[in-house]
Length: 137
Ligand SMILES: [Zn+2]
Image: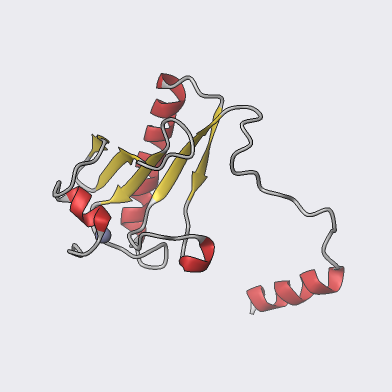
């Protein structure tokens, strides 16, 4: 299941050069060529799925086992202090390549990268209840 116009499918097919350092029958891990930090890695299923909505559960399960394995390897071998797992779905959330992928982003203390800004204002109770109602329906 490949999309000929997809850059990640082309990496899977080895039609374009990449920095692959892990490959199984279902998954691939390679260095991001626009790294947020040294060792920034992309993990993908070899099959083409657009995003989290599309990937079958069994493949997702295998993929996240790979993410765990690769994260541990990066943590140990690159002697980093931490890492983020980032997975964007749809353009509004920053998804650029429409082939499901997970970023592993090495971090060090006070590196100033990817800070989630927690708002100072707590949500109003009514707003939280309204949202909750939408989700439990
Ligand atoms: Zn693809």
